[in-house]
Image (tube, rainbow, N blue to C red; front, side, top):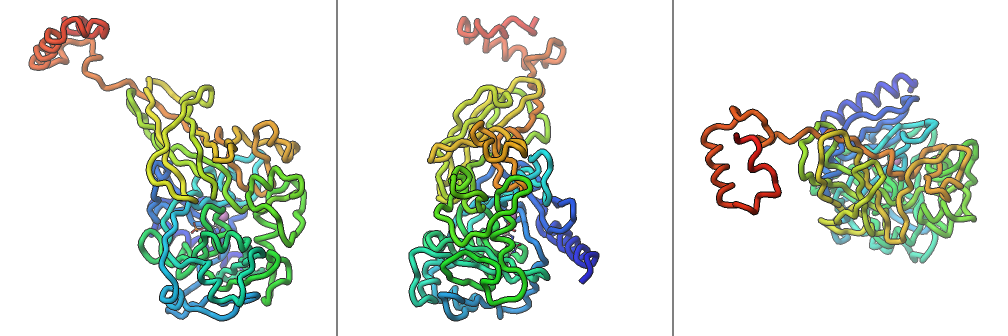
Length: 452
Ligand SMILES: Nc1nc2c(c(=O)[nH]1)N[C@H]1C(S)=C(S)[C@@H](COP(=O)(O)O)O[C@H]1N2
Ligand SMILES: [Mo]
């Protein structure tokens, strides 16, 4: 297939997705290589559950064509056998997992200088309820013995000329809370989200949740080049891409790491180029969304905050661009691996205001303010900046996600200086209120104004 054919096919795919999903818009990369769409509006982040129509989509290749129900998952390495989707559903209990999925490239567009690939700002995060079967049960059924450590590699069924889409997760995580998902928000998984079955890794960056799951392979080490019984490149998506590294460095392919927490890897002396596993603490304001001016007065500022498989401890909101902060209230559903809603009341006065939120996780780690410069490398962390990295991965700064809200004066009939604008029915009513309230109203100053 020529490059033109490939990109034509992909643009057709995007158009079809946009038709099915009115809540998303296309996000392009400069090389025009990837098929992605992201949330079209900030309003997505004022709700706990993301309708599938608003859920971002991110993958490399074409969606595999699936005509019938003959799809099977193959088990290899320390696993053996094969299961159809019907086998899985019949044999194992159905469970549900609420999962906030964020693409590790979310926020990449906030890197300066620009990095390659899709320039997301905040569009690639969403929360859905995924249903399926517990991966721990599946592994126990298809393994002679499930070890306590080691790695599980998941391979996608998407066609790729260069290699395969393979990702490895530690066995500890695989047997903890992962599922093989067949449903999303109460319906079969839509084609672009991995139909008929995908791996779902709660609280971890989206890249770990392999769509169109074709094979699961249990091994001592994560996937390295040549490790699998398949043609093409095996380790690209685990070992080269989705690694956090300074400009010009080529990540070393490792067989294992001792810590899976992405932030812990960033701070670790031992790991030079962290893998993108669990999601860094992050938050976004969803309402107001800054798209239309709002009226002065009491405004409910609402958003979402998440911290991978750690809990969110608190969220602060600023309405002056980060000068002063106020604690927000966490409310709504509280599931491990899914974001929390937060809100605070704001007495909005006329003018332009910059709203921003910042979250802290249960380990006491707060979102950094900005992204550092390329020459700072990981030292940026010491001065409260997220390290600029060549792939633009796992960024979680708060200031680039600030939004400007225009506040217009209140449309308040009492504000009019023109007495003719009051109807004669209203005037006596107000006068009566004044009489009844008497001295209580003195401080308000409205009593004698406007009514003469
Ligand atoms: N098979 C396969 N699985 C994949 C991908 C892919 O390209 N192929 N992309 C990954 C990436 S980078 C992300 S962010 C998530 C996005 O999941 P979604 O499209 O359902 O939102 O899928 C992951 N799973
Ligand atoms: Mo991603």
